[in-house]
Amino acid sequence: MSPANEESIHQKLEELITAVCRREQTYLVARYIFHGVQQKLGAKAAGIRRIDDELETYMLDNYKCPQLAINIQLLLSGLVVGGGNSAVDAAASIIQEEYAATGDVASLYNEYHGAVVSGKLAPPVNILRNGCVLHPIIEQVFGHLWDMTVQKLRPELANIYIWLIAYAALCSNEPIDEATKDTATRY
Image (cartoon, rainbow, N blue to C red; front, side, top):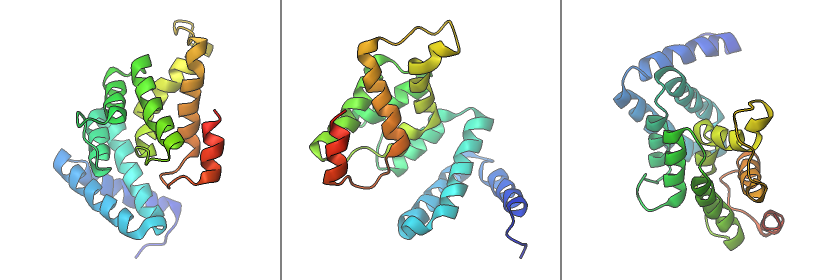
């Protein structure tokens, strides 16, 4: 057994990723297994979560296949694109178009903010945190600062976009308590 230093961990991760990401089927099976282990271990699954994140990042970076990665992520969360959940459909649309259209952002806001206000279970935050979803939202808000071709966001929509960015950055998938709900609904 090799020592557990960052270099050896990175080397073993590369070997695993190369083997798993060779085909879509092995990628799907690996993500399913890692998801099941994470569910069983809960908070103790930080190492598995890291491997799972590395697999997803590798798939996104090397295969330029965000639709596959997000669809698998959604399926593992119990959600299906076209299954009637507007947050899932909006996220899929943003990924496919690589642009955060106002209607898609409004759908995401209604799902997440509506869940916070009503106390219902929100869609998994990892959908919103996915870089292929969050990056276009950030581009819409702040893109005009570094790229003159990006149009400035309409001021009346800025709060919606910024609320989603903040939610993605600050929230976990844990159920929301009354004190947090009170703070989150003010904005």
